[in-house]
Length: 595
Image 1 (tube, rainbow, N blue to C red):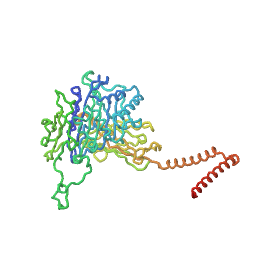
Image 2 (image 1 turned 30 degrees about the vertical axis):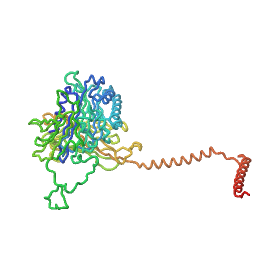
Image 3 (image 1 turned 90 degrees about the horizontal axis):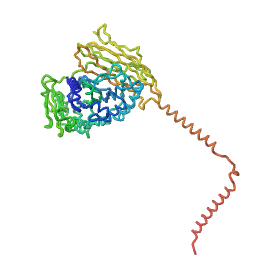
Image 4 (image 1 turned 45 degrees about the horizontal axis):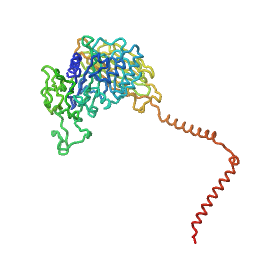
């Protein structure tokens, strides 16, 4: 329910993009088992004329110049760590549109007359973003770049991309997202983490979360005529924080047991005694505050997000009205009207700090966190170092509506699939006999060391059914210089992207819904790297001995004693003997007494 509310707010902001140049909001949603979802949303825009003239106001200049230099019409960048737990946390935030696969994911529409020039501009774009966000995007080469045909949908609100627009997609599943990526993200904001909801973002708290995703979306938005076109940028950060872990101070991150008198024991257990304590189950919602979650209070509202005519709601909490919430006087509370999902928002003053506290409380009702429309599990099966198999299981939890979606896989070139072994078969009974599972397919084979494999399938799953997709693949043998330092760990395989297609007369949301599977590790045949080392050492030793001996024979001259000058040697010997005699006589003279 709350995910649909986020999508509705997103649509409203797109329609009214010209009404406000900068907008920010923090949405907090309590989750089961003592977790909370914090969604930071930052939106700004610039007129298309000012953007083309590089006369930026709220739009970040550094990013705008990089996009203009690479002729990028639309950009989508994702930094994600962790795994979303749909069984416990419900539906994904923003219906998965603001989420990427594990690591770094990037796709963009680039304006170029040919595919070759588009790839050159794509390389320029990845190198610029690599330096801007302190990431390894410069490693997105041709082997990690694909050209999706069915999966990604443009978010631009205008007539559409021209014929010279090329969609390119790249992913780095092994990239580690850390504070070095968060700091450039904050520098793109107008208040740069000094005020507003961005002042709550602390790298120690954000990257200690169970799941974290940062997204940047840049696309043109037009309302009516071309004169009303603007270049809009949306920056979001979604984190799932563990309340108990977030409360630990920074200087004492290791959990330690507290005093025995502070333990809350379940005395109804038969084995309870003075020296045995069984922890009592938590009943109700766990208490928390902004300072507990982020280690600091909110430093007022960003002054650029407010004006005389608008009163933005900086912080919103998706909780029932019966839940008690204590806010500082600097925030004005506004509750949602009846008949809509229960929530409350706060208008914060720009010159005062704000904190929100929710004490522990037992509620009579539970929130509706929604559910995923499709469940996907992707694994690598098989044994041996030569071949393997890929298996993906799709489950439709709905009892009434079928699910049709696009399944997109980007495989490395050293993972060679056998398309003739591709099978999509149902599991279990009750599957319709004449149901066509795969309705469309797009396949682009790999070229060794030049590009990877691209596979897109349009799959349909009937209600309350499970479909298993399998195919075999061959593992290539790499050159020893192509192995990374941690070759025995395995090679990262990018997550698969699933885009749900909307059905007519369906109860599904009108917005796009995306799901990412987990990334995989592919073990490849690994040579014994000690053998090249031994060969190099042995060869170097033999070459050193051979070169030294030959060089000595070529340079040294062997002559007789007479040719070397025997007279000079006798004279030198005589001088040395005389020197020794003088020293000896002087030492004897010192030993005699003077009369």
